[in-house]
Image 1 (cartoon, rainbow, N blue to C red):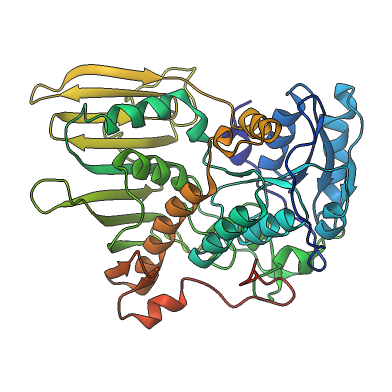
Image 2 (tube, rainbow, N blue to C red; image 1 turned 60 degrees about the horizontal axis):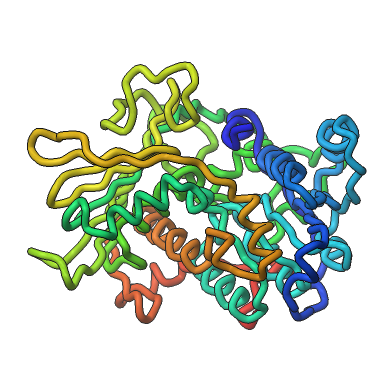
Amino acid sequence: MNRREFTKTVATGTLGIGAMPTILTGSGWKGANDRVNVAVIGIHGMGQNHILNYTGIKDVRVAALCDVDSNLFGSTVKKLFANKGLPDPKVYADLRKLYEDKDIDAVSIVTPNHWHTLAAIWALQAGKHVSVEKPCCYNFYEGQKLVEAAEKYKLIVQDGAEQRSNPCAKSMADFLHAGKLGEVYMAKGLCYKWRDTIGKTPEGSVPAGVDYDLWLGPAPKRSFSKNRFHYNWHWNWDYGNGDMGNQGIHEMDIARWGLGVTLPIKINAVGGHFMFDDDQQTPNDLIAVFEFPNPTGGGDKKKILQFEVRHWITNREGVNSESPGAGSNYMISADNTVGNLFYGSKGYMTKNVNEWQAFYGKERTPGESGSGLGDHYADFIKAIRANDQKLAQGDIREGFYSCAVMHLGNISYRLGRTLVFDPMKMKFKNDPEADVMLTRQYREPFVVPDKV
């Protein structure tokens, strides 16, 4: 099942949590022949895709589910466990209780963005291996703390940039880094997805069976509204990061990987929320440009990463055919044009999720190409069994760098000006107003700890 099939109609669930769990020290995997018991945290929408993938891996059991919406347990257990002859998982509303369960070896975190980092850090402190959905951090500061925690507890931590597992993406990076496209001076990420208005929903009572206080977690206390809950939280700054941090973070990661860069030194993002008068806060059209140093390059010694969100009728920009076939994946559909473009001194490259193609010279002559999909879930399990972070194919430091670029772009957009960043100090240059937006005020007791 394609992961994006869920996101068209439903959204991720959320977790329940009490206080910080008891801190444990990870000691690696028990043994190569032991079953891996995984818990999925957040089972609405993409969480169900995680369940399906883990239950399809040999000697892996989804042993527990966790969500603050207890209404989801019955139908999920019936559809994905009982109807398939699989043993029923334990169910938890409280993440702290799940983390106390010594039978759980690893967790897959599929919550809204504002919970990703805290859930991951607490899991590591409880001795669990972690796979965390993209973006791995809600803000820049959280990404720094998650990297620190991963280095401290020596457990497997997989970032949700699943294209890192694809042979297509690996061969793309190898091709570009080998200089076969010449000096690659610019990359572009495209996120053109047909997204209709979300309308307006009034504030009202919390649905029965939902622990809304736990759903809010680190975010400010606010009354319940459907447009700030399942899926549409993506378009609210308190919980999400807009489409650049939703679909677009995948293409941001590919663009940064292909360019071979980490953090930018200059950022400019412009855009807006067009056409619709609704509850959405994040832009549905956005153009962000990031400048990186390139000491070995020609000319101005820089590289450029462009990223663009479009929400409505648009052209393909050469990433796919104007008339994709019936068997197309989610990146090549009537609704979507999602992918990457790379520009080098010898030519350019187009890429979507499972194929890339190079073109050379003024004539744009087709050249080398690559393809292939991988299995990010299976890679996580392999890494646990071998106690080898590299096998996870989604290192959390790389995840942080890609998320950091996205966060810096959103800060530029929200402040309405070009920003200059110091990658060494991890701060903006002489801009305290922008520095404040690298983190947030946390609501007790849901605080991302400064000392992990």
